[in-house]
Image 1 (cartoon, protein in one colour):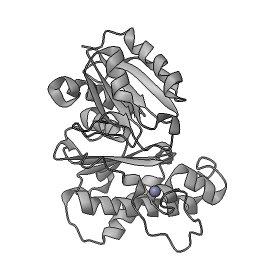
Image 2 (cartoon, rainbow, N blue to C red):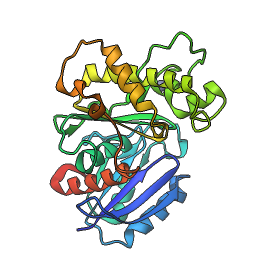
Image 3 (tube, protein in one colour):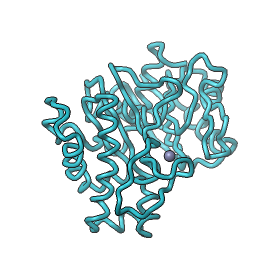
Image 4 (tube, rainbow, N blue to C red):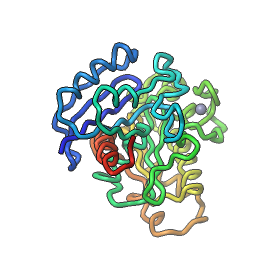
Length: 293
Ligand code: ZN
């Protein structure tokens, strides 16, 4: 059986056709400009393919409440052309197949839980640290939605005393994203993360912010594994620093088998940056089990 997968991102739309093993058979990418310009190209790709269902893993905030009159809409996004855009409606009307819908980060989480670094686990957090910070949560085998969906990137963090940078988030200044996303690193030092790869103190500070956020998440959601993806996490030197600091901050408060084995508790994304599009395939598969619209 063939499934459509759409990873709707703020800069590009990745469109793919895949199968039940998560294999991507065909893939294109369309720049995200305006719905009027972008969506016809996206839908034209899928119209040529004999897909049984489609999964949409979408940038947000989005409306995931099935009973809401704006279910399937992109809601209060700062990408103004997409504000209040009914993406699920557009896909459904054009393709006439079931549509699975969730956040981009829940999509990546689903990819990793189904085929990657958290295969078979029921309590997992996926965080992407790149141009923004977002996170998906699975608890008891279900993706966490709640009132809307989790926005892990905007939790407030305690600023490090030596950090003179005011914070990048237009809403909260010193939230996780405001202190630790790629643009915050660049604004703090005047150079991109890539250019700063060899600067030890940059990653020391970055690892402290990430570890603080992870400590909050470990204590509130009790995940069995945490997966870190996104462009900033391509700086692999961060992983040992983060693991050490999480242990230090927890300060022995929790004793579990998982926390004794930090190398397998806090892990990199494992699907070569295909976790999002593979997760969208799983969203499509799940929509045929009655979980979609
Ligand atoms: Zn924020």
